[in-house]
Length: 362
Image (cartoon, rainbow, N blue to C red; front, side):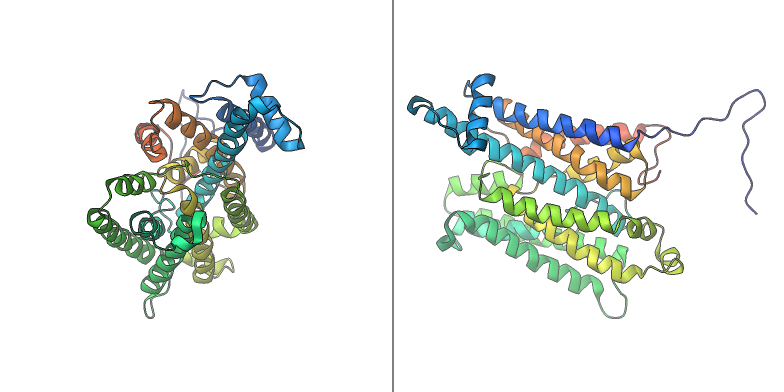
C-alpha cells in the first residue's frame, strides 16, 4: 500500500509548481510572434528603414503602388525577407509540434523529429538534386520534391523494418530502427558528397544538411504551412490519446486505446510533417528536442496544453535564429542548424541541472 510523504516537523511542504494560465500565454506568444516576424523582415544587411518596411508590407498585402526607384528595396522586403520570415515560423512550429508527438510516440524524452531517420532519408534526395541534378526538369521544385519523396521512402523503410513479423510497432523498435536508418542514410549522403565533382555543389549540400532557409519563396510557404496545419490539427484532436499513450501500452489498452493502431497513425503523421518541413528547410536540429521541454516547464505535461503552446514557441525561436544566422557574420550566412545547436546544447545542459524538473513529466 502506498504511503504519503509528509514534510519534516517545523518545515513546510513545497508548493506545487505553478503553471501559467493558457489564454494569456497564447495571446502573449501570438503578439511576440507577430513582432518577431516584423523584426525579421526589417533587420538585414541592406539598410531599409522601419517606415519603408511597413509601407512595403502594406503595399504587398493590399496591392498598393510603389515608386520605380523603390522596386529593388520592395523586392528585398516582399519577395525575399517576408516569405523567409513566414517559412521560419512555419518550420519552427512544425518541428516543435512533431517533437512533442515523437516523444509521446516512442515514450522517450530525448527523442526529436529526426530520431526516426526521416531527415537523413530526405537528405539523400536533396543531395541527389544538388550534386547530380536529379529531377532537374522540375526546376525550382526539384529540391523540395526530391527531399519529400525520399523522406516518404525512408518512412516506408523504417515502418516496414520496425514492424517486423509478429512484434508490432513498439517504441523501442522504432527508436532502434530509426537510429540505424539514420546512420545508413547519412553514410549514403556522405558518399554522394565525396563523389561529387563540383566544390560549390558540395558546399550547397552541406548548407542544406545543416539547415537553411535561404531557398524560401512564396511557392514553398503555402505547401509547408498546409502540411504543418493539417498535422497540428490532427495532433490537437488526438491530444487526449497522446496523454494515454505516454502512460504505456498496458494502461492504454485498459483505458480503451489501441496503442499499436494509435502509434501507427501517429508515426505516419509525424513522418509526413517532418518530411514536408525538412524538404523546404533542411535538417534543423534541437528545435524539436528543446521546445517540448521548455513548454512543459510553462504549462505542464498535458498534451492538450503542450500542443497549443509549443508551435508558437518553436515559431518565435526559429524566426530569431534565422535573424542571427543572417546577421552574425553578414554578409556571410550561417546555417540555421549551427545556431540552434549553439543555443540548444547549453540550454539542454541547464535544463538537466534544473532541480525538480523531470524530463517528459509534469
